[in-house]
Image 1 (cartoon, rainbow, N blue to C red):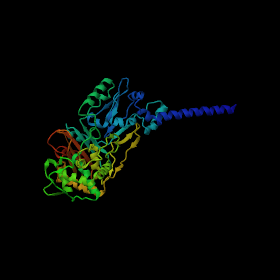
Image 2: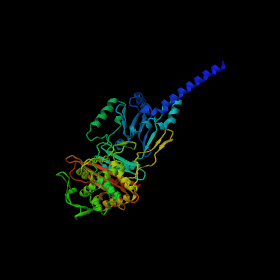
Image 3: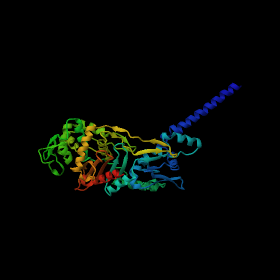
Image 4: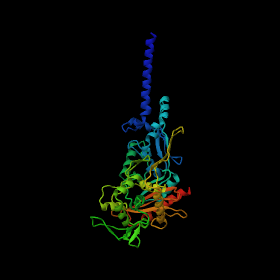
Length: 481
């Protein structure tokens, strides 16, 4: 009699064990996938009844959940909302989410696999898992200065530490207030979302990493010089023919330098002088000599065409393939169909600033559990090494000359060697232009890399007059501490 009872007991215990394991798998191991399933309406509504994790900048919450006496227990609120909205994003009841609120949703709701221990405790105690907080790498002082420097202009500013890849500032204008999108009233959310999505200025786009990409114009010459130097076939003193205009093959169109001027006063021009004066014709010639494959391979090494998450998803920049000679010539000074994000342009400068090593850009410093346990602490990692240290050093010297003696003079900072390159790109619209600056400082031991783009419909202006002064303010702020 005892033996059969023992067998029954073993079977019952095995059944309970199987039930416990199954429940644990569902609630802990698979919880992140379940929580992220867009069909899970119950989870969505429950998430508004739980305290979502904070998003922190400089240790201060810029997104947090506050208790309210409604059918939902917590309301999401945003501080300095327009300043941080393109980065932080929004979390809505009926229009999805965006930004960090979307990219790290499972962390903020407490459903990430890294929070398995907290989920198990909640399961045992019958409580709701609390969301973890996300600490961003953004420096609030630098973010504010970049925001103010851009003013009322449309465009973007990004600043990062080239030695670590930490993003110090990410500004996109126009921006928006995400607070109406966080309302618990469906009609308020829908009205706010429709107004923003119908706005032709596209305030919902984070221009640093997404939206309609930009023609880089002459800032692409940074990559072109890097390709030339790294090939071993060219030096800063390599000479190119210097005609007043250059016919495009199989076309009636010609390439001209900015303003139709000569690139210096001689029959030939060196690579360094062409870079310093930002002349188009020598770079069109260089592009034909280097070839599409060499330029494209280096573009790939810098991150063009790659899927990158920081953890926000970055739209891949593009360097076209299969071009004819005319298209290659135009692409060699950042026109035709070369398209970039400001972050990609900053990544080009960052590799040069960091002795040829490109660090993976990152927006998140750490993820912190409600009990202050650090769930994840992000460490710098090398993304790629697109150029040699010797190429990086020589290109840095040329970029310093570009600021001290060339067409990027408005980026100069008294007592500091600043490396930089400006650009003014045609947008394909009758009067549209994009005004660029990218660079870093101090050149000998870089603390900050910047990329600035300003959208304009003006017929006058340049990267030096429009974008470089913005970059100067950001770089000076970082160096001042």
